[in-house]
Image 1 (spheres, rainbow over the protein chains, first blue to last red):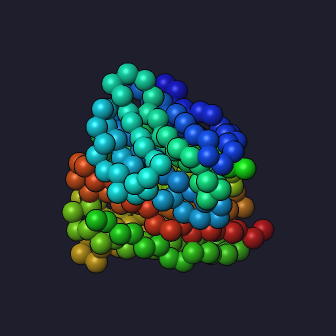
Image 2 (image 1 turned 90 degrees about the horizontal axis):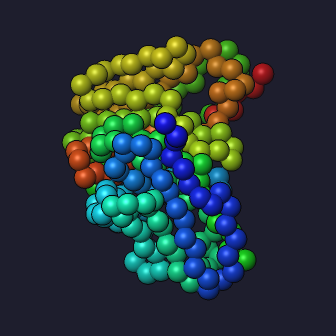
Length: 113
Length: 112
C-alpha cells in the first residue's frame, strides 16, 4: 500500500503563473487535508475535503486558491496568479475517516520567482 | 473552532534525559490527539496518538497522557537520543467534519 503521494516534489513558478499541486491519498482513504508550512514555522490548515465535497475551507485565502477532490483522480490544490508570498511547502494528508490516523505526503515545495 | 496551544517552542535536553511537551486544546468535543515528528526537510510522521477514552498510552520510550477535564495532553520522551532531535507537533480533532488542528510545534534538540 503506497503512502500519500504528492507531485511535483518541487515546483518553480514565475509571479502571475498558476501552480497545480496534486495529492493521491492512501488506498482506502477518503479524507484529504492540505496544509501550508513556511520555513521554521508550523502547519497551517488550508482545506479539508472528502470525495467530491469541501468540508472546511476556512484556512484557504478566498482569492486565487481553490481545491478539489474529484470522484476519480487525485486531490488538486490550485493557486492562480502566484505571488512571492505563496512560496512554501504544501503538505497533503489523508485519513480513512475523520478522527483516525492521518498520514502525510512528502510535500510540494513551491518557489515563486 | 478548535485551538491548540503547544509549549515550549524550543527544548534542549542532554542525551539520556527526558523531554516533555505540553499541549492544550479548546474544544471539549475533541476526541483524537495525535503527535507528529518532523525532521528537517521531511514530512511530518505520526509517532503516537491517544483517544479521549484513554488517559495514557506508551510505546517504548514515548508516552502520551491526556487530561480531558483540564483539556491538556502531553508527550513524554524518556532516555532521549540524538535521533530524537526534530520538531514535534501535537494535534486535536473532534467529531466528523472537524479538521485536524495542530499546535505551533516544539523544536527538540538532544545534545550528545
